Every structure is written in structure tokens, then in C-alpha cells.
Length: 481
Image (cartoon, rainbow, N blue to C red):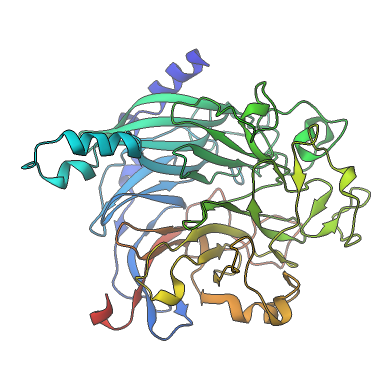
């Protein structure tokens, strides 16, 4: 890995920016002919930025200072005060077929919270607080499908190097440097189900969701973390992995085993997922997961959580390898439990018809009103809908009633009570800014990948250029902002 790390650090430097990337024109507009609709009449969606690119995720360096990653160009772009810098901060060589590419980013201070408090106590009284919030004292974590040559060159016989998680330092207000390879994960057979959401937990550790990296379910790649008893030994796929900021396993009773890579697994049994966040009240982890022809999910992820794939999707058992629904009930003893350390629980919410569920974020502020504080917001890629969920009293489930009392949206009508906004396009990420407002990243259009088996479905080519937008949800009354 050391050799690969050194090579990658050379290949993915910011100076490697291609002429194609730098020649793209980015612009910010103030109005849209057709913009998103927020159901609450007291709120509206303000367009922060619009530009050419397939932006898959975003993270904040500071107030009005956003990093966005381009899935297909492999770049990290910086938007300050609603204006995008002409040169990318970083340019990686990525594979782009289907869901491969630059797909995960997280930003965090280099120091732990305890260390920061110690520094503050030792600092002279006349020092400004400005240094405490310095954007130059940050780690930037990037997760991408690394390629051997130029972007998109991942044709048959030229497989990507792998799905890699790197740590960089944000230096001198202008670049990412000091690359460190933290995780070298499977990138084949793919090309879909690479996951990509990264979140820093309240324990100051890093959590990454990774799918089974096996779109066409080739049996030779099945592992025991997919509940396949005769599968291969786990290799990092199909789970939520947990490491510290230096890439080391967090060895405690909350992992599946003491040997590598079982000591990385916080949870397992995932087909694929794009949403991950911690409840600011309880510290519990939640995720979103994607079904094939049915069964998108929202899950409460406790330590050792088994999401059930390949035996169960949504609440339905898979039968005879079929992608059609089987029985609603099944025997949990059929699942692989790693000597009792893995425990299955059913989803807290399921879409019968997949919507391409993506970003999940808790709004840990009252900027949109106390009625939304600490609530869950979830986006989808197929319909461009933003959902809002209240949690129950114990915050271990969602507060659902009426047709959703069974935790299943059987049709679009069932969803009406939990729709917060619609018309975003294809939502790829949902974040909360340092200002406490909700931000939504979306492509101009969403849908499934344009493949022959879905000739009449709304679609967008995942490895082609697009237009991306960032929206900020604000009170309609300026006095409330």
C-alpha cells in the first residue's frame, strides 16, 4: 500500500488539472425558470450555485465556504461566497463507469475537541477566536475509485486500482497536500454499489458506508458480510467501516472480530448506501440503503447491525435469488451473525418502489423553526424529493402514522405527509452549514442510469456531464433569517 500511496499522491496532485476541467464555465444564477417547491409556505429554496459538473457530495470548510466533489472529473472544487474558484483544489485520476468516481468527502479539524479545549485554556486572553476556526487547520477525507490512467478509462480489461480512502491536509488556503492512504478497498467487479458517504462521529472517528461493489451479483465475489454462509472472507465490502483519523481500527466490543478486516466493521449486510449521519441528541448512527427493484431503506445502525443483504431487502425475504418480493417474515437464524456479534433489525422506514434514496442529515439547529430542530431530512435521486421525518420519543424510530404506521410507503400517496420539498432534480447530498441552515446538492435531472433494461424510466447517464445546483433552505420572511 505504501507504494500505491506514493504513486497516488503523485497522480492526484492539484497540478494535474486537465485542460478539459479548467475550460469548463461555472456560473451562479439568481433565478430558475422552475425551482424546487418547499411544502411549508414559510420556507423557500434559495439557489446558492449552479454549474457544469456531476457533483456527488459537499462539505463545508467554513461559513459560505463549500467544497464540492465532481464524480466524473475527480476534482475537488471550492465555492466561496457563491462563486466557484477557477482552478480545482485537487484533481484525482478516477474511474467513472456507472457509480464509480469521486464519491465521498468529509472535513474535520485536525485536533480532537479535547485538544482544542486545552489549546484555548493555554492561549493568551488577547488572542482572537479567529484562529480557533482556521480553515487551514483541517483534514479533508476523500473517497474515490482510483484509476490507472485518465478519467473514465475503466473499460473491460482495465479495471480500476480500487476504492480508496485518503486523508489530506488543507494547506495555505489553496490546496490539499500530505496525502495519506487510509483504506484500500475492493473496486471490482462493480461498477456500481461503491457507496461513498463519509461522516465523522461524536467519538471523533470516521465512518464510511461501502456497498457490495457487485452490481450484477457475481457469486465469486459474495462474502460472509452479505450473509452468504459459503461466501469469501470479508474484504471491506458490504458494510459501514469505522477507523480513527489515522486509518487505524477502533478495537472494542463493537466490532465483528479482532482480526483485519473484521475489526473495521461497525455494521454489515449492506447492498449499497449514500446516506450516513449521527443523531445530535442520542449519538445514534442512521443510514440510507438502496434496493434493486424494491426496498429502499432508512436504518438505525447500532453496533454490530446486520442490514440483511443478500437474504433480506426492505422487510422482504429474497427467494431463490429472485429480485421479486418473497415472504414478509423470515427466520433470522438464516443470517450470518459472526458468532453472535451481528444482530439483524428491520428498517425503520422502507420505500416499496425505489426512489434512489441518497443523503441523510439531522438539522441540529432551529434556523428553520423549532418544529424542525434535530429532525431527520432525507433526499432521493430518482424523483428529486426531500423528505422530513420526526423521531419518536425514544429517538430509536421514526414517528409515523396513518398509511405509514407500518413503516412502509406502498405508493406515492403514502408519502405525502413526509414530503418536505420536491422538484430538486436528482438529490445527491444533504448537509447542514455552519450557519445552521439546510443545504441540498442536486443534479439538474435524476433517475436511474440509462441502461437498456429500463427503456421507459427517467434516467441520467452516470458517467456523463450534467448541471449541478446547491440550494439553501431559508425562511421566506427575511426578518427570520
